[in-house]
View 1 (tube, helix red, strand yellow):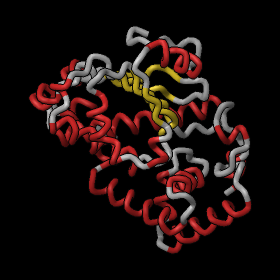
View 2 (tube, one colour; view 1 turned 180 degrees about the horizontal axis):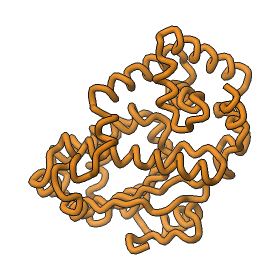
View 3 (cartoon, rainbow, N blue to C red; view 1 turned 90 degrees about the vertical axis):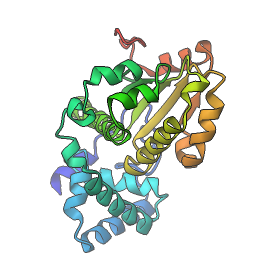
Amino acid sequence: GGGGDDFAALPYPEGHPAAGGAPGYLGTLDEEQEELLSQFREMVAAKGLAAALAQLAEFDESPDYAALRFLRACKWDVEVAVARMESHLDWRRDFGFEEIMMLEPAQILGCDPEAVNRYFPHWQLGFDRQHRPILLKQYGPFEIWNLLEQTTMEQLLRYHVWWQQKGVEIMKYKGQREGCPIETYTIVLDVQGMALTQVTRDFLRLVQQIAAIDQNEFPERLGTLFIVNVPRVFPMVWRGVRPFLDPDTESKIKIFSRKEDWAPELIELVEPEVRLSPRA
């Protein structure tokens, strides 16, 4: 509609592939991609899912953003992309997504969120230079057996989904303020001090389920994932998770063990006013 066209003309922020002319985004689609997007829309409408697609668009102005996230994630195979959108809608319903987003963390976790934060410190750390929210998670103190005394595996997964979606809401808000589409986040996983004893079967199961949810239900949401301060035990964790990642996701992950390697990359990325500490 009219609103969508106005919004489509807004440029992506500097540093984003589309700002450099990379095809595949609103405003940079080539002829073939325009045609595939239009096929996607038709197939969605024929299945009676146009309203559902509009609901998935975090930019209210145009459902094309959501459509293109599925198309890019599915390498422009229209049938696969529509099937993936359908399975995502099923997941939303079965997981109780809309209901979860109306709750507070204490209700989702069934305990004081501070009790979870003690073993899993995590916060939003401002924005990077492309205006993407930076989500920081520290796995050093992560002791799954202590977490499971406070809450359950299911509740931790529900809370993870709530937190990721809050990141999406922050993108939308920031995009409206900056006047440009923001569709991805930057995630920093700090694994300093992680020990072998923490890598239990429960821990691996949780991390695998989180990886699967992020990849399947939040397609094209990851900008860059930094894994920093990697200890000796990390290859074991990586072996447990890597089979669950598709090559596209893996290509967005940067792994660093030494601060002198990751600090320059991260400082290059973040807005100058962001300090890389929880006190910021």
